[in-house]
Amino acid sequence: MQIHTVDYHTGGEPFRIVTAGTPDIPGGTVLERREAARAPEIDAVRRLLCHEPRGHADMYGCFLVPPDDDGAHLGVLFWHKDGYSTACGHGTIALGVHAADTGLVETAPDGETDVVVDVPSGRVTARVRRSAGRVEAVTFRNVPSYVLARDVELGPLAAAAGPASSVPGLPGLAGVTADVSYGGAIYASVPAAAFGLGATPEHLTALIALGRAVKAALAGHPAARHPEDERLSGIYGVIFYDELGPGHQRNVTVFADGEVDRSPCGSGTAARLALLHADGFTGTLVHDGVVGASFRARVAEETEAGMIPEIEGMAYRTGEHRFTLDPRDPLGTGFTLR
Image (tube, rainbow, N blue to C red):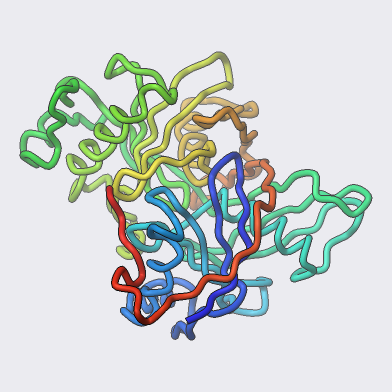
């Protein structure tokens, strides 16, 4: 087995794009291919690239696949250590840079070009801005985003969930509420101050544990169900946020099973903006991630399905790799320690 990748980071969050070695993934749509990718012979490639010793517990990447139709330039399946996500804003931004820099999509050397991408949650756009041939920024135009539930009391849900939602040595969920919204994936938002914490690096260990607890408490809750497609259901991430000033927030997003997004989280930013928009916010949201990078988000359009967010960021290439698997290797496609 030999697999080639090009790696980027967006706001500090890794994104590994497989450019050669992906097995054929059947399906008529990207969403169907997401289901098919769970087959052992395909998923082995995800594990090889994401798990240690070639990756790590917070690794992220994608397989490039055909789009749903000629209206998009490419399709993509996003993956992490636990499986396949429905959306990824930081990855879409990285794909925009990759498409421009490699010529995968012809882009104007000066000005803006739309790179249209089919993802499991729908069709999104990476609007690439170049000057003198160099990419300066990418604006991620997402699927319709909206509020699913407000002020969901976590205490009773945690009690019903039992040990899965308990956090030894940390504040419990009693008296804490969450807002749930959709930005291509479903997120629960909780102010970090509700636990006496901040969305900062020194509190990461506690926030990871609390993120798992909140997710467990909300498992099976009606707010965690996508209103139209069950394949998009489930709390994907928990966003712990700090208010830094008008239109300025910082967050730690804990997604999948205890993974931490180093970036401000693209689809999570869309979910946050949906909540703020419903509260009457009309400006530009400056959204900081845990390592200090920022996205800028605004509502571009309102539709019957929800508001359309646009989120600006930038990605940078970090390397190119050729991964192999020695058939004698007793660790095979790797392992995770958390």
